[in-house]
Amino acid sequence: MASPYDICVVGSVALDDVETPSGRVRDAVGGAAVYFSIAASYFTKVRLVGVAGKDFPAKTIRHLEKRGVDLAGLEVSSGDTFRWKGSYLKDLNQAETLDTQLNVFATFRPNLPAHYREAEVLFLANIHPALQLHVLSQARKAKFRALDTMNLWINLPETRPVLDKVLKKVDLVCINEGEARLLSGCDQLPQAARRVLRMGPKAVVIKRGEYGANLFTRDQTFFAQPAYPLEIVRDPTGAGDSFAGGLMGALAKERNFSDAALRRALVWGSVMGSFVVERFSTAGTASLGPAELRRRFNDFVRFTRL
Ligand code: AMP
Image (cartoon, rainbow, N blue to C red; front, side):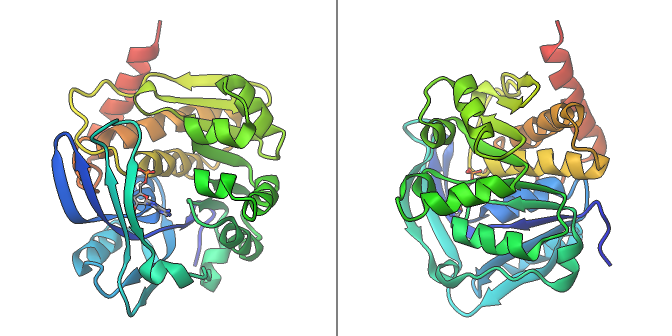
């Protein structure tokens, strides 16, 4: 039985090869839906929709289950898991994609199990906008819907009109600086955000890596800036998705989507993003205690109070 506080997330489940100035990992667990689910699981029940191959580690499945993540919507297909290879050697704030192998993700057609369709909160991680639209048509009870996207879908002439349709149906867009500029055609972020707001959503969150995150709604602007001042960032992979998990998790837990709740959620997003980048893959958010989470939230508030 679903509860109103549940979040349904649809996105990639991946094995990543990542190199950063701190080192490299191969076949590390990743994917937007995985990073998101782990981060959001500290706040509420998460129901994941995605596809993995037979090579996806059983250990991770057990870990997600232990964290209470519902995997009824995780399809395990014969074939290999989606693979992404990225480098942060040139710029820690910007991944350079070296290789992508879609594998079982190529034929992914998200289908929400019946009980997922009751969830009030929906997060459409970065997938093809036609799939995002397909999910929206199944999650009709969702009261708060958010999406992430990427340059490819914004740029391609055949996907942009579909993305524009999706934008009209969501409440929140959670994108990075570059995506905001590309989507809006504006260089200045406040202007870019205003333009995205005119495309449909009630709120726009712009993730800015080490510079934090900005929230724009029709009535207000709020900056969680800068990001938590970490001494070392080992692996930025999953920062955006863990941020989104913290943000959406906090909103779902409060069951409040007001501007004030969005401001608090922006800080929770920053908290989860800061934990994940401290270690490679999902190690930074794998098991955190409530005191640790609260301490970092309070630090953020303290750092930014005049
Ligand atoms: P983030 O660093 O938060 O943007 O998320 C990185 C995660 O997104 C990695 O674990 C990748 O496996 C996954 N990813 C990379 N490229 C794509 C893509 N084209 N579609 C879906 N997921 C992707």
